[in-house]
Image: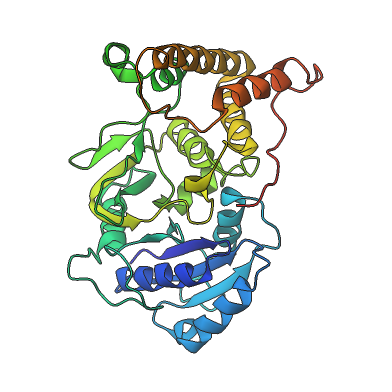
Length: 353
């Protein structure tokens, strides 16, 4: 059988990470593999707590062995997951340390319908314990598919949009102008697709629950660690697609995702600088500096038109405070105030997750 390595990245969410790991272990039953928890330099005692709990629960000696490793620095989502991917399977694992599949799971994502109040949740009657198995079987049955990801829903069962097209100039305009006739006209450029009702091919998927072939990662490389947070899975899926390894959205694999627990996105007052950095770096790396400039102009123009509409219609602004101002300021710094030899934006500021 093919082997699988599950990687869960922790940053200051030790209790939730343990619940996610418990759910993953149940969902991995019957598959040869291991689970690695990477502590992303939390600095709050998470690493020590995780190590102690893994031993206390006997997970380190279980059928699916669990280990906890320390990243040594908080380089962001991609860098932290890369630490776990590079570590491979445990040294004494039968058949060697190189897995066939890598499965990354967010620390606030659960292959069951949700955790209970305890540290080690039991099976939920409405859960889908086969969520990881479904992805595993899908890659086994579709050797040309590079990556496979899950249908994701919230704690209340609300589906999350996690299947996307690659960002583009027209996609940036459509998403920012928020006008029905334009969205219909640019339907083939809408980034956030309607939630698929069946398994289908997509451009890219959210990294909360994503299974990848190790062979593909060997061919194209791991996450680009220039990204601190956001757009890293977009760029990785794009790199895979260019190399001929498509991504599939597997509707039968169900994951409950709380969302934004580590990032604190739900409480943001302003969009953080690393989001703007990652977005601009993505467009520049994939399409070039000129295209990135056009995409930014498109986003600014669409956002301005949206704000003009808000003067007439009372609607929720839909953006964090100062988004347009921060976008324009970021673009000015990137294109007007950087030295000419800078071909791409600098690495994102290493803000904490």
